[in-house]
Amino acid sequence: MSTLECPSSGRFEQTERTTPKRSRERVTYEKAESYRVLDEALFCDLAFVGPDGAPRILPTFHVRVGDTLYVHGSTGGSMGLGARGPFPVTVSATVVDGLVFSKSWFHHSMNYRSVVVHAEARLVEDEDVRWSTFKALIDRFAEGRSERSREASEKENAMSALLAIPLEEVSIKQRSGGPVEEPEDEDLPFENGVANVRTLVTGRL
Image 1 (tube, rainbow, N blue to C red):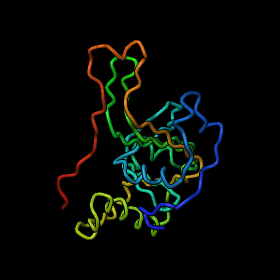
Image 2 (cartoon, rainbow, N blue to C red; image 1 turned 180 degrees about the vertical axis):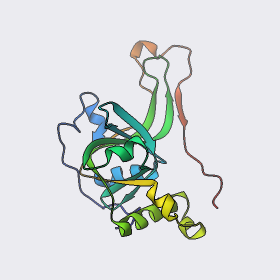
Image 3 (cartoon, rainbow, N blue to C red; image 1 turned 90 degrees about the vertical axis):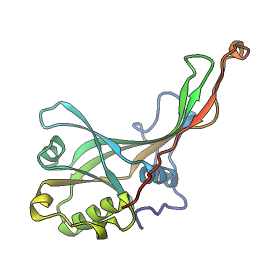
Image 4 (cartoon, helix red, strand yellow; image 1 turned 30 degrees about the horizontal axis):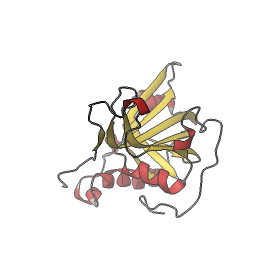
């Protein structure tokens, strides 16, 4: 399966951790849609407990290869230090599609697609997997970019940590559509509606 290929069907098994307490109608477990969000999001947030027992959350670049999510970090950072064996992580990636303006403060919202992953992350040590995954990471910037830039040196490679996160316990939460209004607010003299949001890359090198 290529990086951007999505399965035509299939669902993740619902678990206690992927079952929301609120707005359950917005949550699904479709693999194809979850993979599309992971592939479209420019970065993800990686949450874990550091070696000192304190919580950490790091924004980081990622790439999906088949049913595995890979995230990049530094061997000298808190992620690299914690990656001496499999350890629990939570990953989130979000694409914002619109700002929802309501006539009331309470009902202002966003149209979004957000994926949350729970997993045991492991440090990737196989050099062939590391090379092919770092190549895929660079090619996320632009198709073929890895062929138009220098590969990592031995020193740079030693400074780079790569975590593999299996995509098995995953949920996707989404909102779309216009604002929700209370019946008593319908006649208020305030504008409402949706302002579309999109990320635009203006150059490819």
